[in-house]
Length: 600
Image (cartoon, rainbow, N blue to C red; front, side):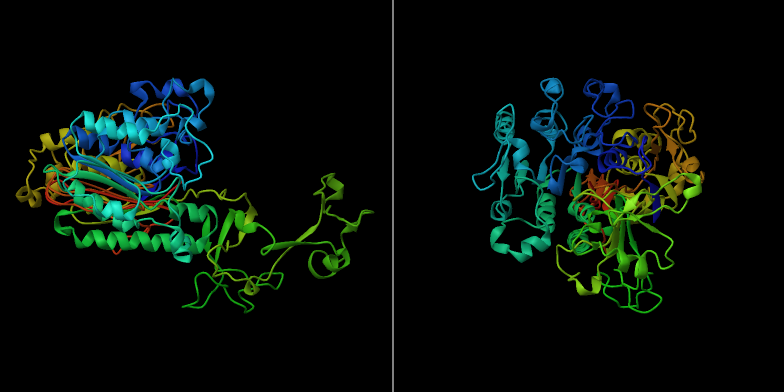
């Protein structure tokens, strides 16, 4: 178990695009950018085209070593976390050309276009999630409000590309078609809705209205297809709607999505050999959610903190155990009300001493510092609604928030997030790391990307029987040293660091391979054997063996040997993460691991 620091190079509190770039590509970057380093500022189309500014992901590293790759998500497949596996863009919202500034169309590709036509994207074996609208592939039942400006159907282009290359490919759009996909298929594209996949609770409330596979079903099919390769694979799986529920302050929906994530992880572990598979679950970031008050043990986590004198607010009203520091949960009518009875306000709530002045317009003039000339302005009294009289178990109930934000506009949090790992090389997650550390651990475990040279230096060979000899710390002794590990914020040349140095460092516990401005740094870790894991807002898997699997919710794995699998969710029997949960794992021989993540 470890903690990872989630800040972006330009923000204390991150977004999921930049965090996914960190844990999938090993480089910290700027807020709202994907697959580029910190030299690319938001909306700088031209800088994002420069190859030296682009960050390759563990999927690109895996493809270079002949591994099969894939991702599964409950969001649009062009959303922040999956996009970090294949795209390079200065704005994560440019998911299709309709959302791009007109002056950049035809110069910079939108994210959907990159997935279908650029290397890495066009070579991904399995892609599943939502987002038909981004690809110009809406069905008659989708009622898409917009279409691609260029008029292209990118799904048809994807199928044509595979046909021209003599590859077996299938496009599926419902669970029945998904289950009919043969494990011998080379490529699978699954788009199951025009946008994000619906919340599990919404599906349960009106099952006749939806024909959507579960995260577990998508993950298991992905594993079957990716196991076809004999050199391992990388699979990213994301439970992205955990994060979305928390943005809405829909706590129950977020928790149900977390359970779906957990189910996927459990299913993945049943098909994994944990002795040769690293399972990691983590989050790409937190949310401003808290468990507060003094509720009794066994109290409904969604319910009221209590009615005793220790649990009530100063206004004598109860509040929910779960609250948010900001978000749409502030919204009226069932959270707060504006009282206009000035006499009652002054007497009972706001002004029991009669110190406030009443203006001619029957509003209260709040001016506690008249001598200073500072006035706090006129204000209606905002009072809370008794939440014990509200159905807080309703799936659309928004838990209380202290500061009002628009719908879906609750922010992320900036705390360090946990990384839980089980399996080979899980010991490398042991204290406080930079979030970018996880990508280097996976790369080294699977002997791909920046980890390939370390494998060569340590004499590691592929093959299941070699694995147990590789998990010893002695394997790190001859790792390649970096060109000068440095403090956070001091740029150094990208490179490798002797893990013995890496493990012995204090707070940053990982060498920083910064690419860009002084503030941009990325922790890099190299391990000489076994599997390692990393996570972020999503999940990913890389294996070089026979089979590997991953699940969405924020898990990722990389392996170099046998079969692997990963699952998604914010929690698992091995680990748990919430908010924008993600997990990733990497193993070097034998089966690889499962992980999951969610995030916006």
